Image 1: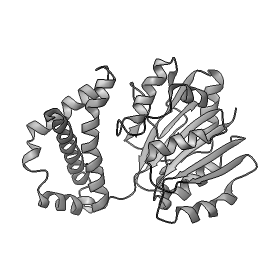
Image 2: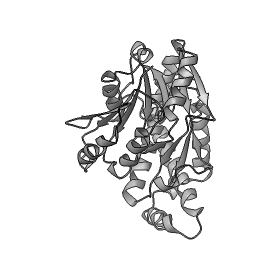
Image 3: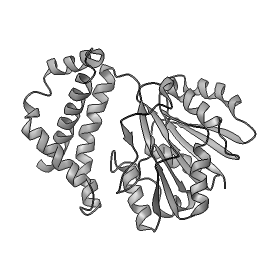
Length: 298
């Protein structure tokens, strides 16, 4: 049973090297790593060329550079179509795994050919923190899948039609998981193995702007996603919570003030470590609520 590891990337050379290094040092035999470069304009191309000697007789590193940006979901579809493995394992380019990661995924698929495996994702600030216990853990979604660490038989993905590339920003993996479940694929959760570590990196002013822009877009597409799911999703509860907090805290009256954003940027290195994450999460709630409200007005 051969595995193909699908990794879309764009301008993440600062962490991609560590991602490839961890995936090249695996206990599994006969697998391929497929990097789909979504038109990066950093040194990703040179970095991957330097990393190729790390592959062994048991693994192969394929590099597909796209001439123009198509988005990570479309890039994943390109990777799937170019994969030769029976099992597709999805990992993001800022995710690090241990040496038994691929073997753990494959072992579960050998036991049951009609499953998708969902692994957990711990969050760390930088690659050097790999392996530590963390409070923030992702990878539990009772509706669908969390793409940073999951695996699905390639044929099952082809049968349901791959990722919807543009419709549900922030929900494409969940929506695909729903289609897989409808097709009879059971999602198995791996809590004690298949563990991955997401490298969050350090926040900057531009990175924060991108986070809030995505939060607003996620709010907009959440309503379309709920409609597609026919209301049977935890996103209903999530949206109600977001709207409630935004209303109670009157975030529309103070969140988007220039002074607050500058305070948020300054609080990144503030001596009291809870200040920045608290302000960041409140701001994300505001922008998601803003996105939800903008669609409701249409």
